[in-house]
Image 1: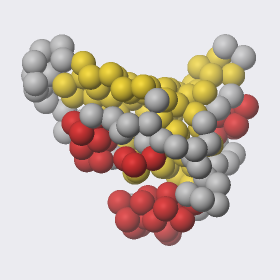
Image 2: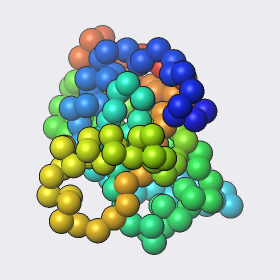
Image 3: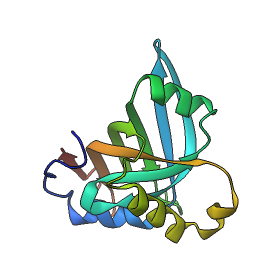
Amino acid sequence: MSLTQSQPLAPDISIQKFLESQSVFTFATSVNNTPYCASCFYAYIPELQLLVFKSDEDTKHIEDALQNPIVAGTVLADKLDKTKIRGVQFTGLFQRPDSSVKNKAENAYLLKYPVSALYRGTIWLVQLSKIKFTDNTLVFGKKIIWER
């Protein structure tokens, strides 16, 4: 799905608030049945269901994602309370931002991480396809599922 097509209903507000409030995601790729993962700082654009992150093109996770853009990942709470586990598992489509979202993506990332302007790297996107949000603060084992 291109970002210019109509967008589905947004994920549950609790998913949006969780993703907006956290900082790091695990980014998982697979090429030739060889999995790889990396941890990256991210920003979330809820109206487009996009995770925005910055990384160098010559890193293994970016090289892999350019070969196979179907990716997955997780987001855990920045401050983990073992009695109140909250987290997201996701799948999505890795992509370079096109001209229609490039400025919005860069601005979202720089607003959340202003110091990142000092470091090299390229802005990348994960267009979310499916989210499973586990929130044990609601009810133990409570899961909220969203799919594009």
